Amino acid sequence: MTTIRILCDNNIEGVDFLGEHGFAAHVAHSAVDLLFDTGQGHTLPHNLEASDACLAEVGAVVLSHGHYDHTGGLAWVLEQTGPVAVHAHPAVFDRHLVRDADAARFVGCPWTREELEAAGARFVFHDRTVEIAPGLWFISGYSRRRGQTPADGRLVLEKADELVPDPMADDASLLLDTASGPVLLLGCAHGGVLNILDHVRAHLGIRRLHAVLGGTHLMFFTPEQVRAVIAALEAFDVALVGVSHCTGDAPAMQLAHHFGGRYRRAAAGSRFRF
Image (tube, rainbow, N blue to C red; front, side, top):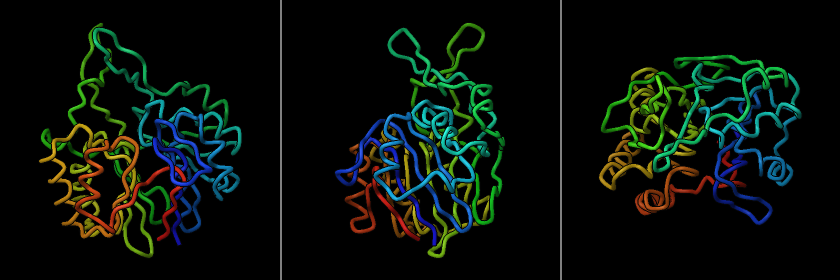
């Protein structure tokens, strides 16, 4: 059995949980327990205590990308786990910025690589899709088509004293083989849900997904683009859609209206068994 518990999200499911802008999930998959992202770090300790998840058995951490709301809790996690493998894209420590009016502020990982390694992080970097454990795939390095990629112009990098668009090269997802079928777990899908789905089909030969969970960044998609995502999910015969974090209220309602009983919020406190 595979169990995914949402530990950090903007929304909550259950009165014992707290919400924050960020994402983290505990994944118990076959013989591997891992943490997928760590939120900002504000609510993770509380929500772990409120859930029946435990960091004592966690054998790895996977980072979906380097933003603070997915990496901020990593230092605290390492205090609990001790030395542990941390899987991430090599660009996870890029100096990610967000442009507000005429200024840009840092929104990357609040910890340096050196600080995290001193705390016990054993980084394992992947710049492409790779199986990191039996039946568990780190999805990254996929192609991005312009019309299928979120147009988030606020995200920038500083190069040669000027701000340039941040390609979010470090965006990564997880694909899990489960008894119910493949499950795709997203952090933010900065590179575009449609591009990720295309990659999963072309690179891994997967044409059916049992579930798609997590942040989708659909808040930057038009209703027409969201309908294209719905069509793609239907083409994968998805039985469960559980979105969260950066999906946006209007796209989430559009998904809920279409999928009906196949839709669930992947809010903090949610638990999915496959």
